[in-house]
Image (cartoon, chains in turn purple, yellow):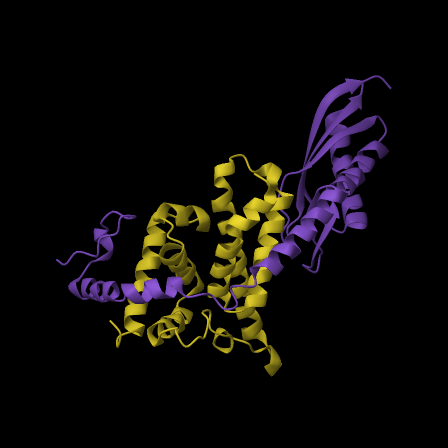
Length: 169
Length: 165
């Protein structure tokens, strides 16, 4: 059987050369190698205008660096928008602090935002002595979800609650 | 390494890949811009700096594939003739210069006929010089799947360029 053209990046791949006609076809492909090489060397359309794109990217990056990190979000209609991560965290922390006996510590977005996909969160908090996690957890998750949808405009997905400490009220 | 240096290193390669995939410079620039801004916003989630290359190529590749799927849905669902824009209506991906050979133009034309999944795998392998393992990492598929896609792409290219092989 005719072997495929050798390629230093790949081991011989016998299973895909099941019959002679295929092997012959790939010999033909090997004869097109110079065309592929020319295609690789050919400039993509307007390939010399890259600097304008870089300037745009760096301008947005510098703007965001000045404001602080941002989180990319999608509206219920699937349209992209961005808000500072600090603002997003502040809204979630506020929802925690509204619940009697709870104090928010940290908020981390644990999922990547995508159209139609809710945002997963990991919320670290402390609770007053005597409170029951199983009692307040469903209520707190609902409160966080409601605030996120009302104020931020995204649905909450999984909200992991981590009680880091117990404090005296 | 400063973020700007990462942009310098990968910008033209990603833009070239996206132009060859989408055949439209404006759309390609949007994908590359989104790719870099996503990496900028999620840099803290990058555990291994050596994985940056695979990460940006994955974001850009997925961006192109998602874009083409959306365009296909729009084209299929379109009732307004102005929305019926298919790949055949977009421009060439290579400079239409006199020194661009007829064979290269023909190859560029044949590449349009490949499925987006085959085309991205072929471009990453033949143009970017990535290995099967690297492409599998970028596309989130098995090496066997990458081999299959590239193999079928090669067969299609031979078939489409019978007069040149």
